Image (cartoon, rainbow, N blue to C red; front, side, top):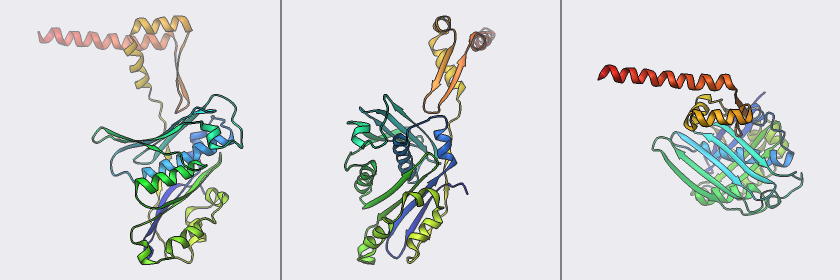
Length: 296
C-alpha cells in the first residue's frame, strides 16, 4: 500500500508527543529522472523528511524552505514544503559523490538555512540550523530542541523508493507524569530500523514500538509532490527582456530553452513560439491604445 502521509501521535499519560512520516510515490515523483547517487538521495531525503515535519506546525498559509549551499561535492540542496504539504526539491553537484562520504566531505562548510514564508502577511523569517554532530539528523535534533525548547529525537531513513521517519518530543511536566517515561519511549524508539521506517505503514510502526503504551493517533495528513509547469511565468520573464533581446538570443542560439531546475523540466521557444508571444503582446497594446483613444 502506498503511503504519502504524516501523522501526529501523543502519549497522553506521559506528556510526550511525536510524528511518524512515510512517503513513497510522492518521493519517487520528486526523484524522477534525477539519477542521484545514494549519498545524495539519502541527504535530500532526510532534508525532505524534516521539512515536512516542520511544515505540519505551520499556522498560516505559506511555505517552508530548507536550503544548503555547500562548498563540497554537493553545491546545493533545496526542499520546499507548503502549508498544505506539497513538496518539491533538488540537489546539485559539481563532482562525483562517494557513497561513504561524511557530511563534512559532502557539504564542506555549507550552512543549513530555514526560511519560513507567510503569504498572509508577506513576511519571511530566516534562521540557520547549526551544524552539530556527525549527521544532518544531529543538527535537526539540536535545532528542534533549541527552537521549540523541547528535547527532541529523530530517526530518518531514505532510499530511492521511500522515505520514513519518527520524531518524539518531551513536553513540559513530562517527568512529573512519569519519571522514566521519556527514557523509556526514547529507548524503545531507538530500536526502529531504517527498513521498518521505509517499508511499514506508520500505524504498524507505532504498534511495534509502543504496543505497551497508550498512544493517541491523530488523523493522517497527505503529502503530495507538486511542481507545475508555469509557462505564463516564463512568458512574462521573456517579455520583460523585450522583443529585440529575445530575438537576438533566438538568432544566436537557434532556440531558447528555459530549464526549471527544481522541477526538472524544459520549456522551449522556437521562432513560431517567439512570434506568437510578441504577437499577443502587440495585440494587447493595440487594444489598450484603442480604449485610450475612445475615452479621450
